[in-house]
Length: 457
Image 1 (cartoon, rainbow, N blue to C red):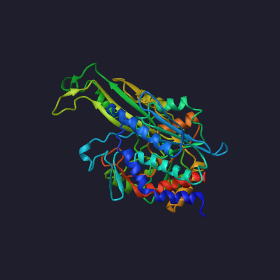
Image 2: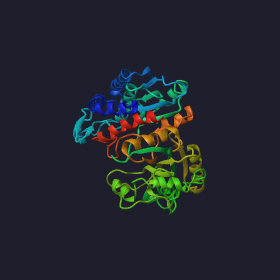
Image 3: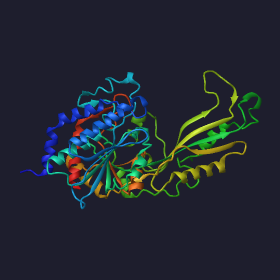
Image 4: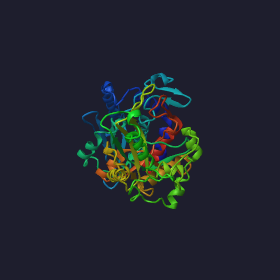
């Protein structure tokens, strides 16, 4: 007689065709959160997932209304108070599909080709939500869940989750848990399972530099009036030194050094200089001296110029000395750095370096969020690592992701819980781009890994 874990795995393998059809039905719904024309479809997607959760035996299912799109909650708490409680996070909204003419098949008519499912949201992240749901179903059908489960599935992730924080704050008792499982990530290749244990934070600013009270004729006044655009360019250029270090005063004060063990772990990742050059098209890389590209993009803080605006940029020539210039600047933060501290550093840099012939201002234009990191020795990470090793036959890679996922920090701050981040999409899934796809082979393996994960806990 086989044990419950093995029975659940065998059941999942027998259900591949149904699993794909279930995902196709969800991908057909154009749940675009940013466009008010899709409000009805957003709710239809939420209600669709709600029905799926009910069908597999989840309880206390409800839609928590927000000023925009609802958050779906459900639970199954029969394992007992002495067993772990896991929140499974997800989102059912998607990015717009435009430009439509670049799709080989319609984005909301999911199409199977060569073992891949093409359609908007197939990978990000409807496929990951359904993988979690299918894994829970398989475990429940064969001995029941050995852990307590709560679901938190939102419809605004693709627009920055503007209402999720209030939902979390208003429902702290409802969302009590030991940790969260967040499958809104991916693996590095079909045979390269991965766990994300760190995310960088974000602080975003506008820097404004002003000179004369109106645009001037550059022939008449050029040479006697400091050009705000040139001054802003000089200031931006000085924000890094020749070694790629950020020169804002105090910027690195709270940054923790990477120890040898973690650097060795990150060194296992197959993302060397050739990888980044291939995926970016640049002739060579540039970065902070003393660190590898994978450390640059996940474990070290950055300062980047996201946009510049000044003067005349139309066709032809206009000899103007602009009255003002503006730059949008983002900083990616590592653990212990805080957006407010970075704002103070940026202001201090401007105070020390901007010339008195101009005036300037610094404006933080997002609330920002600090970095988050989960111990690789936590119960959740160890359970998932062992699960992936059972399925892929190798120890997973551990990654520190360069981007930011606000819900991870919000759950840490409001609920006091860490998140285990994974996912089963691939780097070439065309997230947010035309022809988004999900490769089914690693997706099936991901379902099996989650079955192992729940049992390992």
